[in-house]
Image 1 (spheres, rainbow, N blue to C red):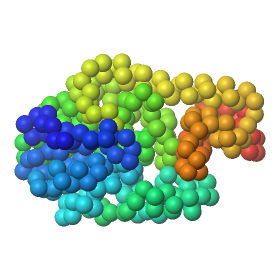
Image 2 (cartoon, helix red, strand yellow):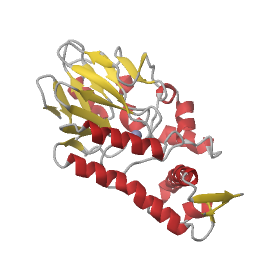
Image 3 (cartoon, rainbow, N blue to C red):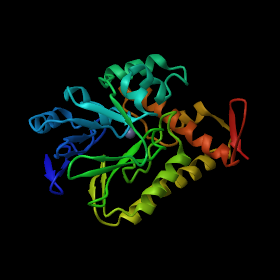
Length: 293
Ligand SMILES: [Zn+2]
């Protein structure tokens, strides 16, 4: 599970291919022992526990990055201030994903129970550009908002390695199914990574990426523009948000027992996308009805 990638940095490969609610993580064994994200099941606790963790750096508040935080008792937990509320409290988690905005607080509570999401104490907040010196290793915080408002990556300047978290370069493209998501900010963050030209990207859900990084980044951002097109195509016929959700514009039909959650995330996803198209004056809204302008 622990794969050494430099003298002090270990890639923690999730044994279940990092499918949410799991992710790949990083561990740095230095004077200060740092774990970046923790959602790799009980396996990560067994693998890292004996080495010890002084500081847990959290890329963002989503549970597929924080589920084992409480297993490393005694470790400091740091996160960007904009995502700190969602790490600390289940109620804020529900709010930041948008359950409250859409009047589905109870569904949010059910989601929190189903996924076993538990708030944990945040003992520190970091900011963009902050450099952490662990002994031999330096880590620079890179604020990459869009996936969530406080989403951050972590850059190792001595090795030109970037842990890009949920700018994960997956084929399905960026995920923005929460009200703290913002597509335009996401695009700017993807561009920032592209300009950094790191030699190695560690993606939370794809793992270590060393080849065709620039091309993969382009393909990734293109998924947003393809979805713009799909949405604009659908809005040749004016529709309400609920019409679009029922037509499963972006996500395929869900397993029956999970359909309410799938529909919720589809709704949050489409609404974030509509916000972008309204800003671009490509979509207009009259009452509940959206149409192409
Ligand atoms: Zn996420």
